[in-house]
Amino acid sequence: MEEPPLLQGENIKDMAKDVTCICPFTGLARGILTDTNHRLYFKTVGRDPPIFLDASLGVISRVEKICGASSRGENFYGLETVSKDIRNKYSLKMGGSYIYTILEYRRQGIPNERWRITKINERYELCDTYPALLVVPANIPDEELKRVAFFRSKGHIPILSWSHPESQATVTRCSQPTVRVSGKRNKDEKYLQAIMDSNAQSHKVFIFDAQPSVNAVANKAEGGGYESEDAYQNAELRIITKT
Image (cartoon, rainbow, N blue to C red; front, top):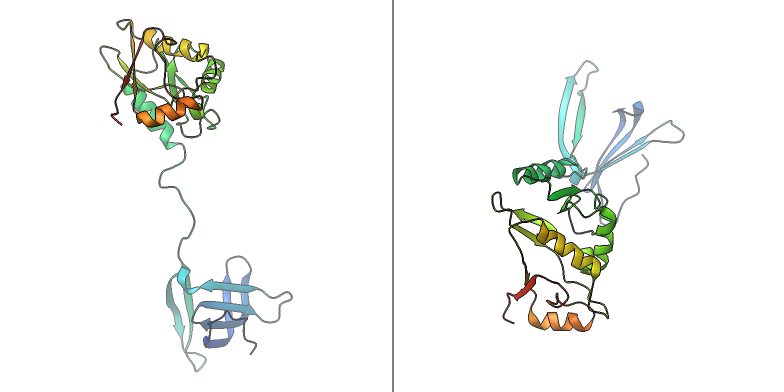
């Protein structure tokens, strides 16, 4: 019998001729079954071109003996080989995060007359590390958001993270601004003003900078850094790191 091509270190444990394979794709196929220390290998006989079935032992879940009979004067039975499910699957159904996100926003009373939900980042083109659904001030259109993203590191525009159900106080998150040469960003300044205007009881925006001071100084030299109270009217900057 013709031996199958072997890998380095692979050796044959057993071979059986006149084996019939019941293939779900090609139907009945007669051939030779080879068992090695690495795999089960089946090759048809009398077919042109031949059909090969090659299964590594590591992907076989179980082998069961079925339909035993001795009418031919010898043991005649079948072997059912079941492989493992090695498909890559997501732990959650695609799109499920949309549902949970919307439910959380609704719990906070969003959307409303002050905040809206936008799908501008649905394909993660505005910011590839932000979620697909973003909550932004209701009076800022999507085209304006693209301009604001230009003034924020990696497109991390300020987006709503939490809203108080009674006072309407909010927490928004974003990355450092890109200051540019002039030190002013009209679109970004207008956007922060819209965040402040979303709460009629507020007359000031508190900006908490959590980056280490050494990083802030270095980023400032490269056109980034932190918001300037001179550029952002009605804003108060607070550094919350000591080093």
